[in-house]
Length: 367
Image (tube, rainbow, N blue to C red; front, top):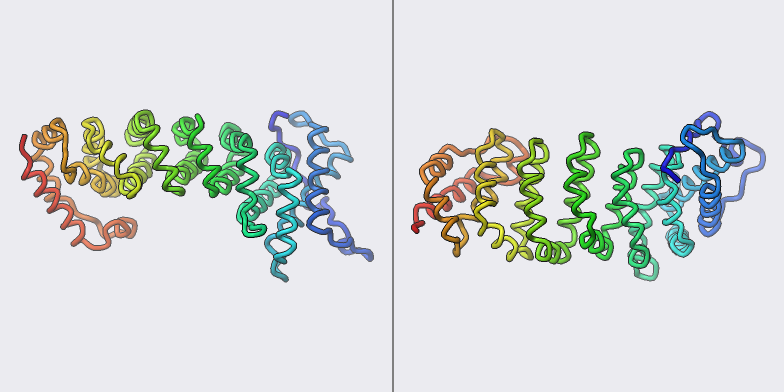
């Protein structure tokens, strides 16, 4: 299987069973839906088509049937507009879906489906990740046993045809702490620094979204990750993200850094970060950016350096050497009245208070 897309099924040729006919098909039960879906996916695994290859009549019929079955599954979970989903049916479908290992088949053969079916699949998976059975989210239990599927989803970024759909499914999976912990402890985390630099803006933004989710959703797991991987992680973060030539990457990354360091569970990591001369230099360079948005986010982090009660001598030396420039910067530093900055500093008074405190900290410094 090489990840080739099967030809899309034309909407004019696709037929829904019983539509417009005298004899309508009896609705399938959730168990029947899942088992039939599995049979169709296994058929796909046994009948791979070369890139650009034409499907024979039987294969095309199977693909149409698979699309219809996945769509029926979506209606069972979400309702069809006329009726709300039935809780018992959702529970039954969820149990059968994970018992039959259908998630594995869908992930492996997603690239063979047409675009609309891929979209339906991501909605189905998103819903199933949240379904409870006997007060338990069984998707979490399933992923704990089948962690290799997370490897497949992360590596989906290497296949641009399915990257967006795989990443959407991955983010739904890492809602579960056990899944997020697995990805965070894997070598995949290093790949994200490259994925974020994709030339395709949509893919790069999507990769950053997943990256941020991994680093912020489960706070205790993330704190453990930072502690164990401090050296390489923040070295990569500084060099590839904060010092990127791409404005969007710099802006997103400095905001994320502030969120990480200001999280209470990351206090020891924050102290380590603001005790580094190299990190201080990176932040001072970001304060010099023309972008007011980046300056604001950089100031959020910079003030942690000056507030540190146990500054290393080399940090104090740099701040004192640049004291005049820093004080001049703070004097002229104001917020433009735009919405996204107001989210950080809702009032000018808060910024003025922070500026005054930083100024006092610097003026009180001595070697």
